[in-house]
Image (cartoon, rainbow, N blue to C red; front, side):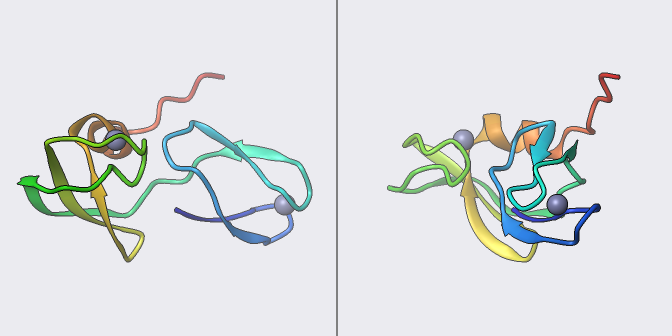
Length: 88
Ligand SMILES: [Zn+2]
Ligand SMILES: [Zn+2]
């Protein structure tokens, strides 16, 4: 995902799937923003790996995440689309 730091407006590519992300520019932590994810096709047999966890799966979901096409396994898709749980 493309993250934008709310503190210094630094933009970078961050790992998805974490509740909190750290800005590499100013080092501050902030909650992961909601991911704009669109599922284009579910359970598609693909010989590739999940773009989020990197594991090869028999079936992947074809998605568009923040405007970029991605192949995502069901586990990651569930995590990516679940509403964030504030833990503070
Ligand atoms: Zn920052
Ligand atoms: Zn995955």
